[in-house]
Length: 117
Image (cartoon, rainbow, N blue to C red; front, side):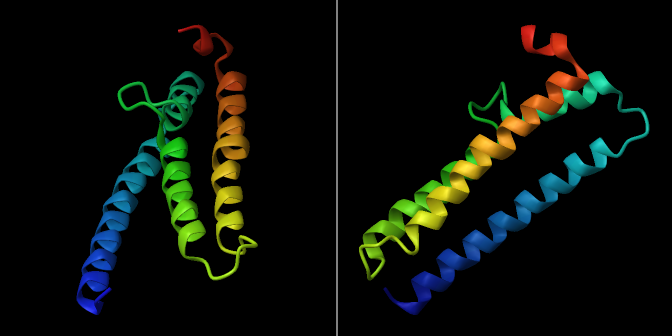
């Protein structure tokens, strides 16, 4: 691949990460608001994990990006032992299994009835 295409791709990724960081800063600002109560915090946590409007939510979407990187690494890594792809697959699992489940647990603790909605 030519350096120009790689730079363009990397530039797009950098720009996308910048946009995501701005969006996450907005979420952080909303979470920091003095009037956020337990029910609203639970709803926000659920939204991060189980976005109603966009199937999957934030954590599953991040896990999908990392899984895509892992699949690509499987195709290009020089050794078949998975020294690049295995940590990526593990990171994706941590996002969905560990972090996601902990978000759900916290949301249930703040609003046990919210799971029924």
